[in-house]
Length: 237
Image 1 (spheres, rainbow, N blue to C red):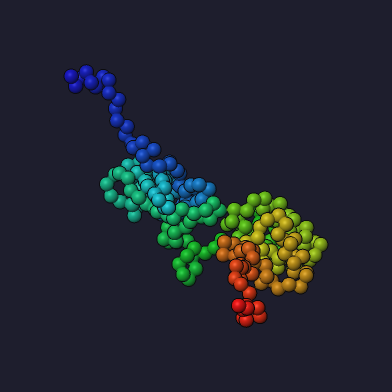
Image 2 (cartoon, rainbow, N blue to C red):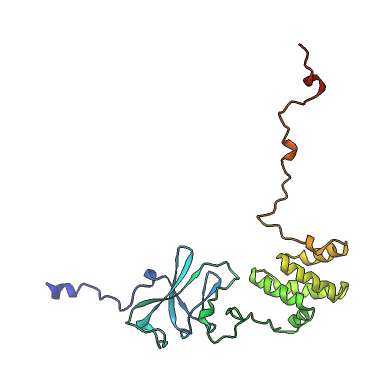
């Protein structure tokens, strides 16, 4: 009967089905995998290799199948099978998640975290934007981290605005926009005009969930109460 069954049964696959492990990803050259428009770091030695990523609660789990690695890193030893190599908190798009321990030979600052990359212009338009000053570089870093759209259009508009109102003024406005998280189309011009009105730069704040423009209810504190007028203090029988 076993010989008869073998003619009808399908052979088991050599590797686990992808759906049981998550999504199949290839580790990029910067030792990261891309998931949900966010880059997550992986340990050294896995560049170009296939890994599996899945969401576990609010974390992203990166798993590798040792039996399928073309070359196994020295630190990754053990029997063939599935091994978890990284676990990260889920992040928002535009904000990569990097574990400094994954880059032991990367230039780092005193606290051990990776040294922030220095933006470099890719063409003449970006070079003209960077020439505005440190505020422009700060704006570019913060805008990219926030996932700002149409950045090149806004950079070109900043260069044009600098030709009208001055480079120093636009560079200061770009720095304030980066600090306040204001990256909309007209925010830069609004900040420049706001500064010309003579207000303090500290007034350029971000309205977040901790801030509300809803008026208070103190005016309603006496609603429903009787006035303590002379007629009430000396009531007539």
